[in-house]
Length: 490
Image 1 (cartoon, rainbow, N blue to C red):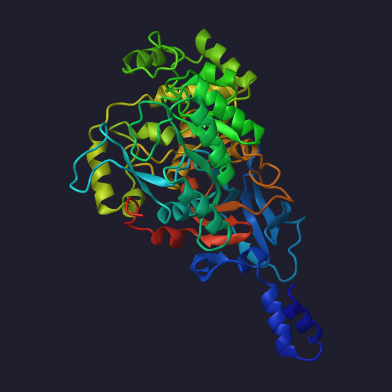
Image 2: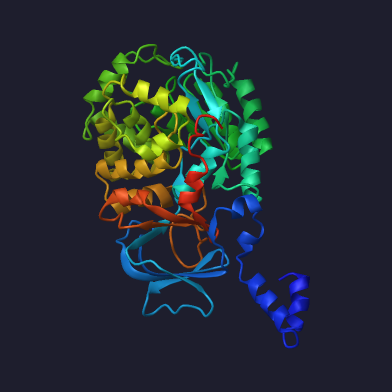
């Protein structure tokens, strides 16, 4: 309580109007108090004490949902959870009757960029395959992530790392709306780069210096990219682990086994990029042709001995795999289901580019990827979840995170298992599972309220009404409305 409010409190027995001032001021959540007017515009609930009543709880642990629960939030923390009959509602609490609604932990996006791909130039001509451009999306993407229920994320490589670092600072300071951001440094790429904003490393020494520089700037992880060498990756891993940071990779020149043995912490995009089974693979070289790799991948089954051996290597070295099924799905001409909500947030240029490219995509290896990710988890592996909003432009921030959970269910996981992967697994990998990722007394009040029951109909995960971050409830629909027609522009 501020000194002004303390003085006002002493006068409560004398001046009734001052008492009302104290009551009103103290009723606001401490987290809400630091928010700028630009953020408060999207806040639906900012009371210090909030009771969610008659709500179905999916707690993120993978346990069965519990019906007709009461969840009490106080000052940004979950302080009580239980049956409505045994969990009293504090006097003066803001009470929300959430019959036919479900609450689950805020999603923890583990492959959530802050840029949008630009597959066409300003004249509408296709540019992919020559150079790849990216549009930093610091205005639209944080709002979409938060609106869809993503309360924490890892950027998993930046094209404008200073923008991402400043974005984190501005969101944390209450200047603009968005999720909690764990910033990954710029792509760490070897010789053979095809992306305009990406620097090519010249060897292990530069890899070490680059990692040290960005660690000093405040990034919390690094991402190795397609043409990095083993010697370069080893330097990055050494720098990161000395500072308590982590390294992931979108690999091609290095096999999954080699990366695991070097000490990498996670690998992106499931198993479709693994060159471990490519008979033409040469050390430190990304194969020019994908034909052999694709054929080898397609020949794998969940029970293939080489694959089971790789699973064990990854598990023994504690290497997590990040599922990015929405990105894989986008490369099929008949998938994903074309959603109006996605088209509505795209700029006219981005919408036209996406629709044109969607028609030309071959059938992807989506179902094989699903099979292998499911088998990896059943073998004891750790799976993380993120949409990777790149590709041909149809995977959009936030909406893509929801689609990832839906596709995990299609892959064979139960809805509560899929939500567990997208919440607690990510929180644990980030070292934040004592604070976020599950719903329990003492945890931070990062949670999502949806209409319906995702535990029986996973598409209900899209019916987001309110997203609580640090106990402040944000209006999902209002956040989405604020970015209509803007994705691909800013």
